[in-house]
Image 1 (cartoon, rainbow, N blue to C red):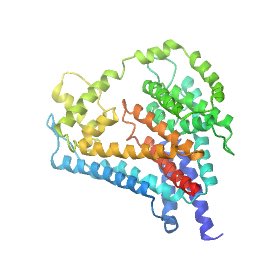
Image 2: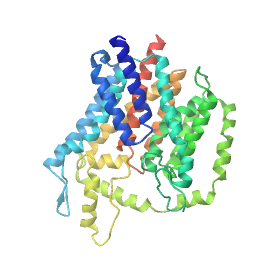
Image 3: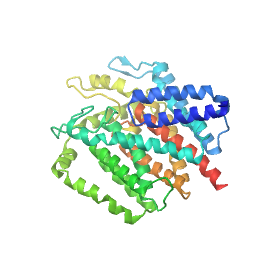
Image 4: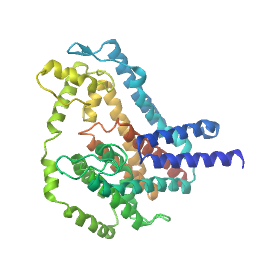
Amino acid sequence: MNWKVKSDQAVKAALILYAMSTCLSMSFMNAAMGILLVVTLSYLPELMQPLPSDLIRFWRASYWLIGACLLSLIFAWYHPLQLANHSVIVHFGQDMSKTWYFLLPFWLFLMGSKLSSEHYQKLIKYWLFAAFGVSALAFLQFYTGFPRPQSIPDLPGRFHATLFFGHHLSTASILIFPFFVLFTLGFSKCSYQGWHRSWMILGAWILGSALFFTWSRMLWIALPVGIGIWCLRGFKKKYFLWLTPCLVFAYGMPFAAIQARFLNSMGVFERFELWKINWYCFLQRPFLGIGFRKSAMMAPWYFQEKDPSHQHFVSHAHNNMLEMLSGVGLVGTSIWMYWNYRAMHLAYQLAQKKGFYGDLGWSFFCAWIVLHLNGLTQVNFWEGKVLHQIMWSLGLLFIAQKHSTRQAH
């Protein structure tokens, strides 16, 4: 077996392992990423290639964002915000540890662009199969808590579907990506060889149910919005009859339980307080922020200074935009918004093409919308497990863009 064959097989195996790990726990994701790194370094000369112009713009946006995060920390180190005689403490290595994720899509592109169109689609199938298998546990977990119980406070005896992600809000932001791919391929106007429509619709139903069982109020709002936008592209209407079991299932759930979830004020007022803190921090350092992801550090000192007589819930901003504004100011937030624009623009561009790659682009475009709607009440963007899924999906988009361009010529 020659060197090229060995490298191709190693790259395929490492990519499949990482694809499936993005639907498992953080420890699996990191372990698979470590293997991916070893394989990349082993065959780096063969993998190197120039980036297309779209990806060069994305590359620049990623480096600008990393630079903005670093600049906010340098400014916080030099001129820290003080509350209740406590200052922001900067640990550059630890504080910047999550910014490496922004290099991951380019890394995946270098590895995945060597795949043929057939092997690329097989890679996606492994990813969707892992998501399908893990999501099937949601039914069991909702009623029994197995394997990781997270009780639903307003529904005694029932449990959030967290799967292996540790928290229901993580699940709500991770599964939306494979869900929309399955949903799109299931109801697409086109049929694709090797993609059985009935299995795609079943998979979408399983993942959709798992998302419902996360019992996340924001997701219950965001996902229908995403599906509504998805419908604008057109679909095979006759196959929507397959959704009848979903409607029967949804209406079979006690409406009172769903209503109680929406009306339960737990977590609502706490979020208002956290938003107030982050807005205050933004006003103190409007241009460069108080330091990348430092709002959670300053929250207890804010309450100690402003309202020491009460105990308060302290955490990050529970809103992506406010987290960015308080942490990296207007400069970093503008770059972060541009970075997200580049991601959504790339997906939308791909969606304008016909066939499999167009469907894939539209899937990710709709998933991105739901991700950011979820981010109105949580800082899902900066969670490690969610970042793995975001960057994996971007890597798939990068590779799809290259394959679609090659196909057009």
